Structure formats: C-alpha cells, structure tokens
Length: 160
Image 1: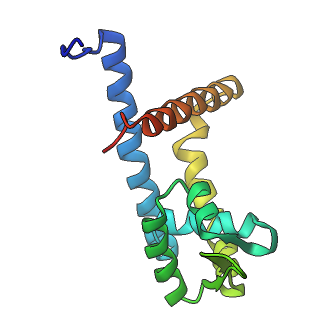
Image 2: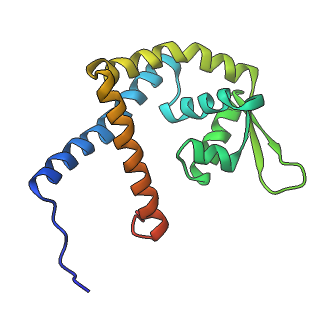
C-alpha cells in the first residue's frame, strides 16, 4: 500500500480553497442574518422549514435528521431547544422506537415570518451573481459532491 499522500494539483488546490471559503463564510453569513432578524440559528430555521413542508407538519426524528443533513444527536438537541420555545413538540411513534417532531402553530408562524428575510439573503449571497446555467451547474456539482461525501462516509474514509 502506498502511504504517500495524494497531493492536490494546482487546479484542485484553487478549487478547494474556494470551496473552503464558501463552506466557511456562507453558513456564518446565514447564521448572522437569522440571529439578527429571527432570533434563531440558520440550522434551527432549516429544521422548522423542513417540518413546514412535511405532510401534517411532522416527521420522524430519524427522517428529519436525514433531510436536515444532521446527526440524530445534533437534531435531538435542536428539537429540544425549539420545543422549549414552543415552535415544535415531540410525539412518540406508536408501536415503534423513536419520536416525531411536530411543528406547532407558533412554529409555523415563525417560519412564515422569517422566510422573506432569509430568502432575500440567500438571493443576495448566492443567486444574484449566477445566471440560469450556473444555477443548474451549481446543482449538478453540489449533487456530485454530496454523493461523494456520502460514499466516503459509508466507506469509513470520510470520518471526522
């Protein structure tokens, strides 16, 4: 087995540095906007938004974790915090392990109230600088990257 690192070539290094800038700066900017305008983190908003789009405004925590790109542990902590604010509640799954996260009326109202400023921020930070073809390319590249990350995690090579 070759133990020499597979160094990045110049193009890969340039792409990697841009990607690191995006994955560092965009979440910070979204969190800043959400904290300022809605008194919650971007991840908390995203959890509420995913629930607002789910049938009956409810999802099993394991499904919600997958859709919110979070570990079950991280999601459980956020669900507890959002529950204390009255924005969602947990309900047991009948006849099975686990529980549902259910968006409350207050939580739905919070999503509806928060969405316009959030969408405006996303438009300004991401989409205003892209044409339609670049948006499609961003979707394609993002999908490939997520699949690659999932494959690396599944094989055990993507462990943090």
